[in-house]
Length: 285
Ligand code: PMP
Image 1: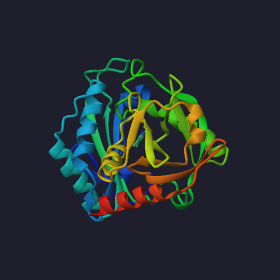
Image 2: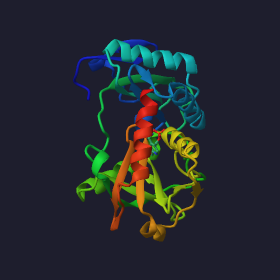
Image 3: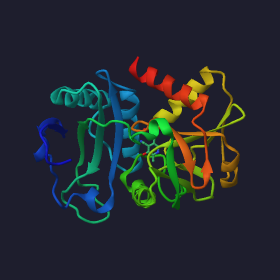
């Protein structure tokens, strides 16, 4: 991803893609002092751009980082990057991080908080699983307690176990991994939230120790508008057997059906297809 043409927005100006570098003593690289956003632009408009910018600022605050840009400035910068690269349909990645500076220890409040925004074309996150249903492995890593780490932040440090889980899943021929939380309840996939269907009703884990995704919230509202009963609750692993359908939600994943989790199978059913279609319509409207 580093060796290509294009422009990236860094700290207020567009720079050449290849030159969008940081110093090796960047605090974030050593101590994970970084928060980020993944967004999608459809037909020239970023879906829920303001919500993403607000979440970025909020995630930053949770990590003691005051991002020196307003929501409006961040929104404008994202649009500028899309325009500079000529994209109308793309994935947008904003990252705020503690840079290099006067300090190089764990504490580094004196170092600047920096912001960079890139955009690139990114098709279906799970490839043809979008139609067939993704196969998920079960991760050995558990989502941590909110008393261990600010789990509602979209913070780089939270992704270490996601990367390890996804590597292990791919080595076993799966598209992704489902993770349990520190209490043993079903939590989410490594970059997407999870939903289940049983007897026409929807069940989804309560977002009390993982990212309450913007797509998750959008889909919950869609389901309410469709008058479908939704249970946001703690889900035990043994319940997986009784669920009929399953899908993942996320900016990159959009609404992706799940066909298998470990040894449990799910059908790509009518409700899953309907939610996926409605989401697609909504983001492009
Ligand atoms: N959980 C994790 C761990 C994620 O990385 C993402 C993707 N940002 C999500 C859930 C879904 O969040 P959103 O719908 O806001 O993209």
